[in-house]
Amino acid sequence: MGTWEDSTMVGINRRSFIRGGAATAAGLAVAGPFRGYAAHAARGGATSHGYGPLGPVADLLDGVVRLDLPPGFQYRSFHQAGTVLNDGATLPGRHDGMFAFHRRGKIVLVRNHELNGNLGVPNSEVPLGDPAAGYDPLTKGGTVTVEVDNWGHTGRSHVSLSGTQMNCSGGPTPWGTWPTCEETVNGGDVGPDFTGTPNTGLRKHGYIFEVPTDGVAAARPIRAAGRFPHEAAVVTPHGRAVYLTEDNFAFPSGFYRYTPVRRDLPHRLVKRGRLDMLAVDGIDGAELYKGQAAGATFPVRWVRIFDPDPTFAPGTTNDQALVAVGDQGRAQGAALFSRLEGGFWSHGKVYFTSTQGGAASDAVTAGFGTGRGQVWAFTPGANVLELVFESPVSTTLDLPDNVTATRRGTLVLCEDGSGDNFLRGLTREGELFDIARNADAAQVGQEFAGATFSPDGHTLYVNVQSSSGYSVAIWGPWSQGGM
Image (cartoon, rainbow, N blue to C red; front, side):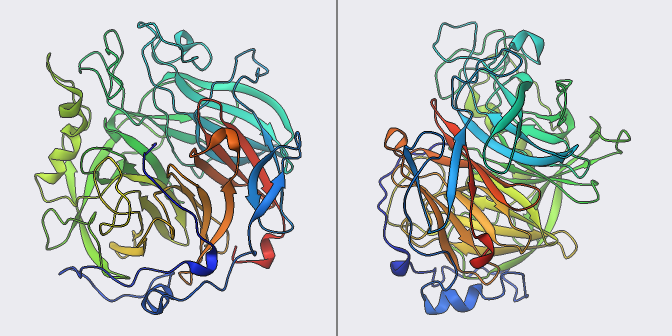
C-alpha cells in the first residue's frame, strides 16, 4: 500500500461515472447485484444517494478537526501511535486492515500494522510487541486486538501476533478469527526489497497467519496458501474456500483461491490445501488491468499453483522472488490484474479492488497499471467475474484500496491517493457518494485503511495509515443515505 501522485478534490455534483472502455472478447451480459451500474455509467449522471456535503467536524477526543463528514455524523479517534497497550507494548503506527468481531457481548477489533524492516539492521521504526515471542525475532509487524465500544472508547488491548512483516489486510472467518496477510516475500533467501534493507537472518515471509479474537496467535504460517505479496483473504461463509488478493506493486498481480484439505475443528484453517489462480476462460493472459467496457463479465477457470511455497537459491533478487508464484499461474494463462488490494464477501460474491486498474487517466502513479482503480466481483456459484466499477478520473474515485460492505450491500471504499483521500460509498445501483475526507493537517495525503462496521452496524471503524496514525470510530444517520 502507499502511492505517490497528484490529486485534486471536486464536489460530488461534479462527479461522473465511467462511460465505457475497451470491450473485451470474453465479455458476457449477465445481471449482477450492481444492476444499475451500466445505466448510470452510460448517462454519467450525478449520484442520488449519500448524506449531503462534507464539512469539518471536530474529533470528540480532543476537538481537533481530523475528518470532514456529512451533517449529523460524529467521530472519536483512538489508539494513536505511541499508545501503551494493556500488555505493556507501545503501539506503533501503520494501522492497516481490520475487522470488528462480536465476542462475549463486546466489540473486538483485530488490526494489522504494516511494518517493514530488519531488526538486525539499525533503524528507527518501533517494532510491535516482542518479535522474539512471535514468528520471526527480526521483524516488526503483526496485529493488535482491542476492545472498543460504538463511540470509540477502548477497553483492554494487547499484541495478538508479532514477528511478521508488512501485515496489510486479511479478512474474517465464519468462526471468528482473522487471517492476517503479509505483503512481502522477504526472507534470508532473497535480496533486499524496495527499502534496500538486507534480509540477512530473516525467516521466510509472504504468508497468512490466523489470529484469534482472544489471546495470542500461535504464529504458524499457512504455507500452502502461498508465498507472495498477499493483501486480503476472503473466507466464504461455509469456510471451504479462501479467496486471496495480491498487491505486487511493480508487477502484474493475480487473484487466487486457497482450498484447505480440511479444517481442524472447531475453528482453524490448516496448513494443507490447494492453491489456484484465476484465468479467463478462452483468453490466456487476459489483461484485465486495462480499461474494460462498463459492466463487462468474464467466465473463468482456475489453474493450479504446484509450488506455492518456494525457497530461493542464493543470489535470488527480491524482484525475482515477488513473481515466482504468480508466474506459475501466468504460464498457464492466468489473468493479469493491477495491484489487487481489498476484498470482502457480500451477497454471494467476492468484491475486490484493483488499485491502479483501468484505462490510462488524468494522473500517473508509480507501479503496475495506469488507471485510477477498478472494483471487481467474483461469483463462485456461477464462476463468473464482473467489473463493478472503473474510475475514469482521480476526482471520481482515486486508487481504491481496502473495502467492506454494509448489510444492504453498499461497498465502502478506502482511497489511497497522495492528495485528498476519501471514504467512498458505492451502492448496489452503481452510484458513488462521499462518506468522509481525511482533513487532518498532520496527515495530508495519508490513506484510509481497514474500514469495518461494528456487528450491529452502528459504527464504522477505519484507520488513518501513517507512522503517526490512529483508528477512528464514526457514527451517525446511516439509515438516511445509501448505506
